[in-house]
Amino acid sequence: MTDIELARHLAAGAAKILLDLRARGDLSGKELGKEGDRQANAWLMNEVARERPDDGVLSEETKDTPERLGKSRVWIIDPLDGTREYSEGRDDWAVHIGLAIDGRAASGAVALPGMGETLDSGAPPALAAAADTPRMLVSRTRPAAEAVAVAKAIGADLVPMGSAGAKAMAVVRGEAEIYLHSGGQFEWDNCAPVAVAQAAGLHVSRIDGSPLAYNCEDTYLPDLLICRKEWADTVLELVAQIDR
Image (cartoon, rainbow, N blue to C red):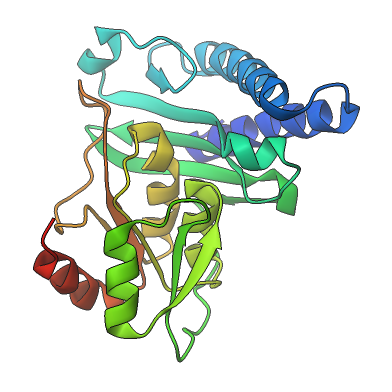
């Protein structure tokens, strides 16, 4: 299997586990989310170990070790991005399978199981025409102040949505133009979405315009911008003017 084929295999397998578990109906709420995370992660870790035994792994649901820091290739995984949405029976949750090579998001797949779709960096969809009024994705429960301020400045419509992966893929799918996040994330929250977004021809960066770096000792990666390239300079300039 190529890296892209493996990423798709991993995303699809975890998606099936999560959908089957939810369909059983014997768990709900936090118990459902916890068990979904556990089952999907256990399967993913076994598959990566079998298919890429020499690669490093960083998963939200597995205790991190320094071993990955000496690896050039590291799989960065979130078995269930959007646990709340998954547990509530919503569709805006995702499975993230990213591969970082030398600290950069090289390839990946993001499954949107509730929507029956998986997007990957090998064959991302062509970008649709942009809307006349830009649409900016924000958290449905805690919109970031920077995003709200930038949206007001450019006259963007706010689009609340659940998981980070669902929001990033909404830009890839042409459902929005901008995803600006400053509320705190970790590498597994955005490595796979960034790989897919940049393959689709979108702008990806930190909100100060610097590159997104992966397989760091400190996995905290608090902010990012994924947007259509025609909006990148404007959004970055506006963020720089905000007193944070």
